[in-house]
Length: 153
Image (tube, rainbow, N blue to C red; front, side, top):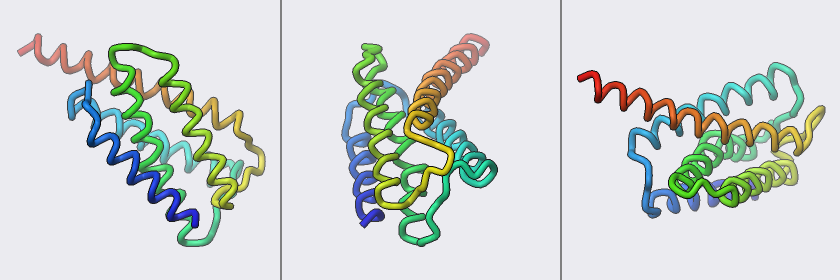
């Protein structure tokens, strides 16, 4: 059941992103996606394997659902959110994306994909807020580098 829910969520978020009018270029979207993916994978490795704050499932389908969450759902939500707030800087969009991310964290706990040992949703909220900051900072970085590259040629 968990795999089906997370697969549908990954498909839905990816489809919504593809169909939405994008404010960012393909290079900016790709760069932010890759940065968030790298941070998410490394953070997961530290929290799950290194510090053992969260215990992961050992069932193959549930673990695949976890991989969908970490590798597709979280980065795509953040890239979509950046495209939505690009001009408006609306805190509402950021709060909604934070709530959606926390909802998926709760679902992973409900479906026994993750088991919080020394962790809670509050820490997840802080982590997701930091991912928002990293996503926005990486967007500013790629724009600054692109602007400098254009002016220097």
